[in-house]
Image 1 (tube, rainbow, N blue to C red):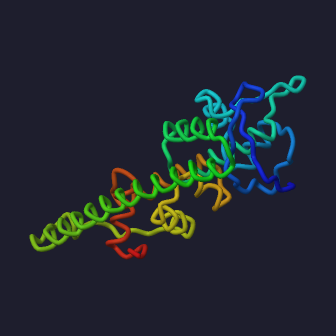
Image 2 (tube, one colour):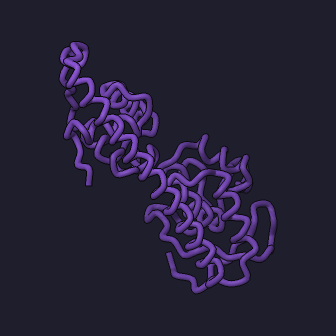
Length: 226
């Protein structure tokens, strides 16, 4: 796809409103013109339902080309921004605010600053979550030590945990903080299959969510704490 010095942004459903988009790479398999919904979903590793959800939230808008609903180049570029944000688990409300701010940007440089500010904000949120996770891991360690000191027979009776190679690979990505949709892309799997895989891993570690499962996996030596 040819490079453009400026990436103009038009809000869904409008013709020529102001605004710019940050420069982000597009999937190499996607054409630089109208693309069918199925091709858009495949290119970005999402489901049709996800694209419809983004439309409902005002983030994307499809066009009619005969009997087909397609996305134009502008919406392909919008999707590259949205997908990047979802890969870092940015909430939909925050993405809506970001896209609204980009729609009001007066230059490419301003759009780049807006996007950078959003990324820095998300980075701070993740750092805070990481701090909470470390405290939870420490608490789990204390509880495990307490159980060991008390000669807890239930703990001694816990069966060993065995992970298949694909489960171990998924667990490693979970420990690195990747969301399920990103893991699905990296492992070349369907999102539903990855969610099922995550559920099995969480169950094996007797956790209530992925964070608890990862914390226990770190304590038990399945993944590195680094």
